[in-house]
Amino acid sequence: MSGVNVFTRATPPGNAPEIVQNRCDSSATAFAAGDVSNRRLRAMDDDAVVASVTKIHGIGEWTAHMLLMFSLGRPDVLPVGDYGVRKGAMQLYRLRELPKPRELAALAEPWRPYRSIASWYLWRVVDTIAPGQ
Image (cartoon, rainbow, N blue to C red):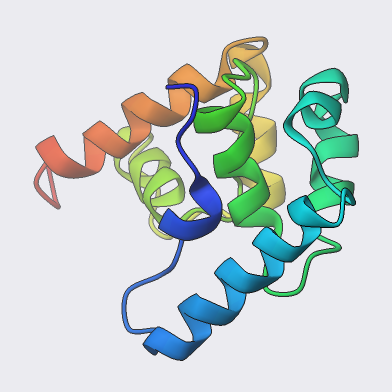
């Protein structure tokens, strides 16, 4: 999946087009100024990537996690703030409510070092398991 630009694709539905444009402009400016580069991001560990890209206006932890998973191909990323991952875990483990990020992290500990792959499966759980099953 190399080459997918999550900075432009990771915008929740409902955001106004100008917000999307501002986010794109901010990330493009950071790359053009040399503050962020693909080469440097690839050389960084996951925590450093998150710290680096979340300095860009409009880029948060969720977008950083998507960048790690889909652009940098990192195998051990758990997007604890992702609704679909949390919903999938709730359905899979038959929890009464969405797990909080810390609860999800604890549930996912045995999945190391493949939490990205587990996340993909949790997204699919939401698509395939009807509520109450």
